[in-house]
Image 1 (cartoon, rainbow, N blue to C red):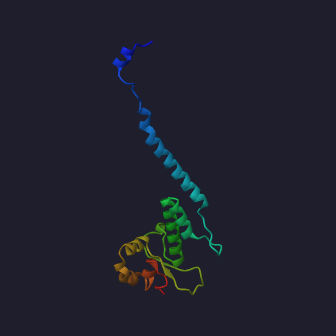
Image 2 (cartoon, helix red, strand yellow; image 1 turned 120 degrees about the horizontal axis):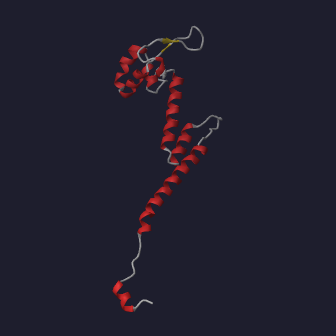
Length: 156
């Protein structure tokens, strides 16, 4: 047995707190894993269908934002933007060539007006600086600047 004098000479017992040094690392790793799981669950359940049976992209993006999936919401927004651009008739095909502006006919009747093929770089420049609207309309036709800027009703 240990003598009382020896125990007093050794001082108080030492506590080892080293396992607590990784406590917050483990907690943060668990929170990150839970957040990633919530994002995957939200992506599986985010799709919302409207009353008309068509996908409701705004509600889907809102669901993703509520779950913390900012990248998923951005992807939905970019997809909707591309769909609107395609519906408005603005060309977004970069592979077609940004240097040339060639007329493109619609798939409707042969006598239908031809839509200009607007270079992607020109559309981006107009979106970055809307004060170029007059020059854009002069080059591609009246009303096309409004269509590219996202107001197709004003272009008519």
